[in-house]
Image (cartoon, rainbow, N blue to C red; front, side, top):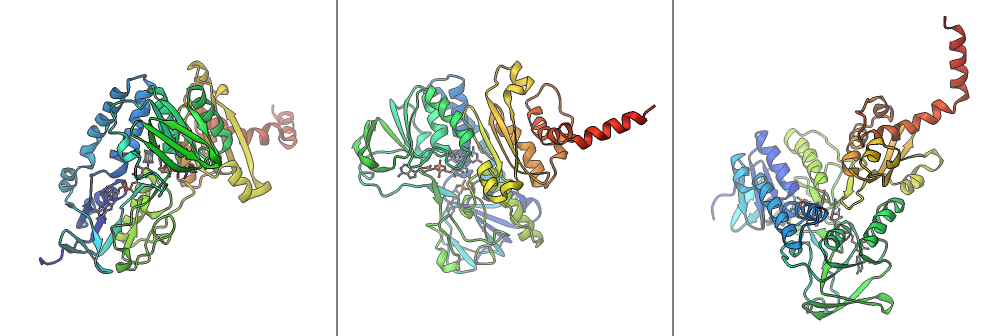
Length: 456
Ligand SMILES: Cc1cc2nc3c(=O)[nH]c(=O)nc-3n(C[C@H](O)[C@H](O)[C@H](O)COP(=O)(O)OP(=O)(O)OC[C@H]3O[C@@H](n4cnc5c(N)ncnc54)[C@H](O)[C@@H]3O)c2cc1C
Ligand SMILES: NC(=O)c1ccc[n+]([C@@H]2O[C@H](COP(=O)([O-])OP(=O)(O)OC[C@H]3O[C@@H](n4cnc5c(N)ncnc54)[C@H](O)[C@@H]3O)[C@@H](O)[C@H]2O)c1
């Protein structure tokens, strides 16, 4: 066997997390090897964010199903060069296409090549949950790994699971002409503030989606083109296609973790605040770290690991400033705590402020006045922001800046924003915090009167 490769950093997985680590490390002078078992770009590019957002956009424009799927494929093709093997080789990364597995606490093997790296980053992502339901081995079903290969619109798409995947794909498909039934064992978008979820579900229903909550899928029957779902309490629904959107689990199966002394939890790899696993030379980044499943979180993890692995700086990963967006129409964005979570954490110290899109002049001129935003504040600092409506995902960006830097609400109140823009909604939200303090305060009124008496 050839001598082992001995890079500074070995990255296992070329999705959002692995690519960010590899690009950063190589460009800062580290010797990097990256392994990829399947497609460069991982889930986000090939089967996640990119095709799903392209499909939603095409559905909004009223394209046909085949056009929308082709548009999704074009979006992937347009972004793929950025994540390609050629680009990474150009950055100086040695890319090996194959499945990496630990053979000892210090060594990883891929197709007979042994790699002994100073540091290893596990960035193997996640895969769709496919539970062992009776009938599921006999009945054809879709997951997001196969959905974007369809070219003919399903007559009646049954979607099991109403998390972000289920809800986004329900809206895309109903707009592209499918009949859609969306089923969840609990509440749809259960993680989000119910005040924001209700208008999203109202819109889905108005567009024709049948939503069945508190209904667990327990068995599947039928065949291609005619699928029957058995739900708990004896209910049944039938359709032409089944999409499983029941969550994603960390992809650990092929890593041979026990050999390397790396422990897993229910949600992913066990890590410390620096994202080190129970093997101190090995880090976890992205979905596999079990702290959330977002491309921007994967990028954030990469930054923490680069500081730690390249510069030996004690960088710590936080979770309180990571935004999330559900790209439905209306769009739903959240950062930090929801109102209910903040109430539990802070009790009476919490103040909640609200502003409506109807009070924003740009929303009025655009005739897009549906939506509102909530700001949760404790002692002058935001602990959470929820926004529902046009551009919510872009609007939450300002709060991401404020919360990442632990700024006060005054940072936004001090900013002068162009009129008329949706961005003023954020300023109005911040202003709501101060307006009560300024306009309803007897002390302020007394002070103004006193100053006025003494002014020439
Ligand atoms: C339909 C859908 C829509 C989404 N939309 C959004 C969105 O709008 N915004 C957002 O932020 N997030 C979204 N996500 C989530 C986002 O796609 C993931 O959080 C992100 O891709 C995770 O990146 P990652 O690098 O951790 O993992 P992945 O992208 O899964 O990459 C892991 C890579 O590791 C490889 N691999 C696995 N095991 C091995 C091994 N042993 N050896 C070598 N290689 C291996 C895999 O082949 C894969 O390419 C969406 C997900 C889905 C499914
Ligand atoms: N816009 C975005 O950022 C975006 C979009 C899509 C996906 N993602 C990421 O991908 C991940 C996976 O998304 P997801 O929507 O698949 O997962 P999820 O875990 O958010 O939702 C899964 C849903 O399936 C339901 N469920 C589970 N078992 C069931 C059963 N037997 N019968 C009926 N319902 C059942 C659960 O109650 C839950 O609501 C998410 O964590 C998210 O972070 C993000």
